[in-house]
Length: 248
Image (cartoon, rainbow, N blue to C red; front, side, top):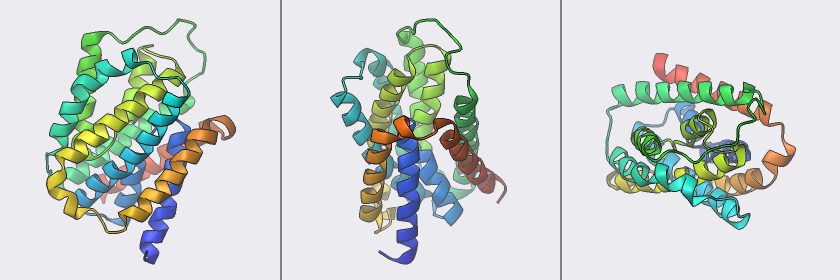
């Protein structure tokens, strides 16, 4: 692996570790790093989806093993999230549209990440309710299409919605978004099959890096690392990358 590829492997490892520690797969973080380096749009999209797919699979497997998955909380979001992600994955935006759109997505991701970092824990004593079917369908479809088009996993948007609407506890939300990220990343990557040749040859090494980082993050991150500062750091990275794409 060349020096640039090795440096990116280290960056992707850290992103996967940090994101996995807060229940996410890292797509927006991978895109943020690639935006700073100057990747082409199709390379950014397909690479981020491939990396996100692997980390989301690891997170899903761990939640399954721990018995924390509630399929009743997942499938209303996934039933339209999958086909709309597939549709979004097949959309090829030109660079002069892709970069601003992804820039906005990254800035919004930064805002959402900062909000979850600064949100008071235990501010509501209400027991969570199951997601209402129609609102969950619409939420899954909208986020699915946006995430498929841009190459983000969607979990960074879905998690704040679930928490804000009291559709699940923090642990349930993490499990739901892990599965949502897995299904949507797989769908979007399938939709983008025509551009798989744009994926850099260094991808296998990067997959190993995020697999290790994602596993470590999912296992120890949420238990031993200060989640508040992790989210703030991620918010800063996302904001800086989004601003760079929007304003050059």
